[in-house]
Image (cartoon, rainbow, N blue to C red):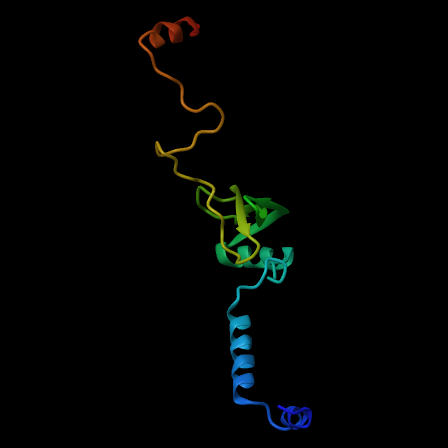
Length: 137
């Protein structure tokens, strides 16, 4: 191809193959998931309003932190006043800052429960006498 023909081709309409390539590139870029920095995170104000509206509680305190690499808010919330047992009860909720969903705090383990610290105590044949020695009457 001569130089003049190339300049005329670029200056005129684009070839169909180039248009198709650009279109495929644009579609593939739209289908890529956004990076963590590009994702918008809930602000403290938005999180407060969302939790208060969703659960009918008052948010007392919000703290930004991370749980397993996930940006979260730890919120202390209080139930509203009323004629029920849970009135004024204070709970802690953990909210995912990316999507606004609550993060579960209980995780099943191999035996059903993951115990903090050393885990459950071993029960042996001499456990009864050992426990009775530590009991004061």
